[in-house]
Amino acid sequence: MFRLAAMLYSLIATALSGSAVIAVLSAGMVSVSAIVGAAAAGAVVAAPASWMVARRLYQGV
Image 1 (cartoon, rainbow, N blue to C red):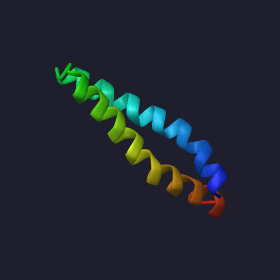
Image 2: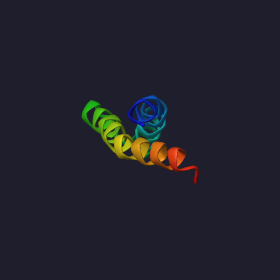
Image 3: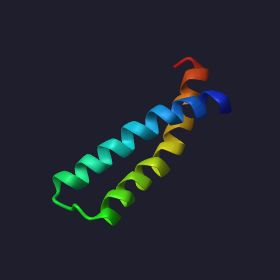
Image 4: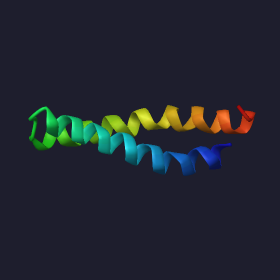
């Protein structure tokens, strides 16, 4: 299951980080620290999300 979660992480982290960066830029925060922070937050949130998706796929639900 770890291999599946690792593969899913690359897709989920990209989507969440990109969405977070777009949200930050839409809010008018154009500083480098805000953009990097949003990307890092998306990458951190993607770790448990990819694990949950992988677990759901293995359960067949």
